[in-house]
Image (cartoon, rainbow, N blue to C red; front, side):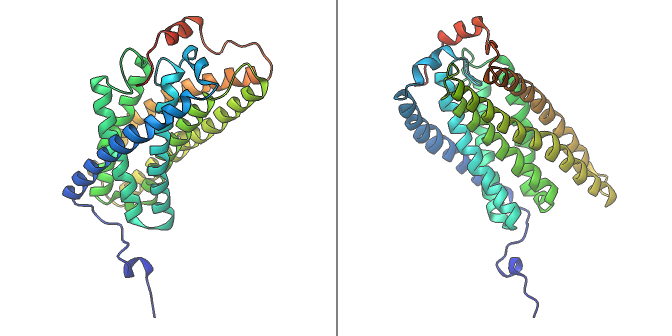
Length: 294
């Protein structure tokens, strides 16, 4: 007797109703604000303040913020969110369980909404006095396509396609890995050779994951998905919209990879014993004038 486990348990890739997406995204915003921002972040900040490396971070510029003291907390919170949501997308995709994929997508949609408003309004973690302009531009390029892609992926059932599932899962998970590596690097003392090597290795690992997700999985997934649609005779707006929204995502990737590769080169050179300036003196001065995360 034929037995389909997915059909038996109702595990089919479906078209998620809009009301469900609206409610799910609202819950996602609450999860981000109440759990990650108001619960995880203060506890992470309290822990960081007690560590021996924390006092030196006032003189180290951050990725998001002007100071490493602000940055270590922001990066850790974003890493925990992205890795948990990304893990749900990965599990849902590889195990063929749509509800896990949908849950991860809705949690990410809530984050995209909350973070876009924070970016536009210039509030935490994007206070304009602390966050470099290039970072704000990069993340605007990142969030807008995310907002416009997650809804059709779930509502139109596009996540039935394995290429789309791979793109969504890898982009989100890789973002979490990059943020976690950045947070870890802030705990390393660059004046100690062993810890400098650890920082360089963390940057190398996160850069490889980022490059694989952004410049292999993402373009190849979009190419194969739109190619499949074209071959199936779907010459409507979906392939064109997907290709168009892929452009700002690639811009974000190029901006971010430039920042990461410059850091990787400098960190690696310092780890190998070369006397390389890791950041400009003027940048250090600006970082020292920054404010702490409350």
